[in-house]
View 1 (cartoon, helix red, strand yellow):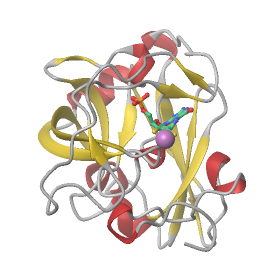
View 2 (cartoon, helix red, strand yellow):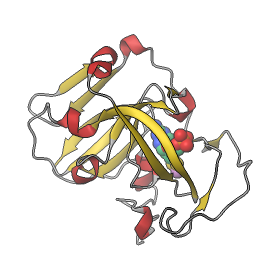
View 3 (cartoon, helix red, strand yellow):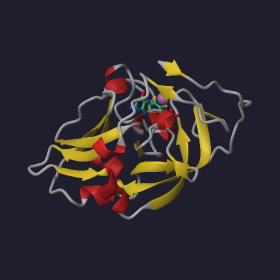
Length: 198
Ligand SMILES: Nc1nc2c(c(=O)[nH]1)N[C@H]1C(S)=C(S)[C@@H](COP(=O)(O)O)O[C@H]1N2
Ligand SMILES: [Mo]
């Protein structure tokens, strides 16, 4: 585990309706990556939905041409930091899933570098998840997952896969990288679903 930026800020408690149990607030944006930062050129970048009869892919340009949404959300890392009112831009996963025919219940997000994370499709739909390519009004920093990452703010931040390249839709839940290593299959911060058995 590479933690390339420390916690400079003081640990603060936050409003209990915004900060889930066991979390504290930070103004920093810590970097947590399980490996080196990949640098895929945009002209080689694609986002693909697999696990369907007709897989669907978008180039970087095609993704940029889809309707973009600006969202302001709170994020919660299982290592106990939370950050309020983060501003992102991206394409909603609803919009992407519109273009495939499927009735899958689960998805496995896959990334440059090999990271994966599993999610119920229900947690990716209904305006709750995005493929985000901008943070704080700037293109997403490579350390934070640029050119694009999954953003699923209502779950612990390990579900927000950095350098995401697509989703594989599945009938059954298959644990991803951290989930295979002891993290909870779903990861709802309000229920403190941190580890297996929580
Ligand atoms: N591809 C990839 N995505 C990842 C990770 C990773 O190691 N690789 N770490 C996860 C974890 S544990 C967290 S807390 C967040 C951290 O995102 P940040 O570095 O932008 O704070 O990314 C998640 N997404
Ligand atoms: Mo994390």
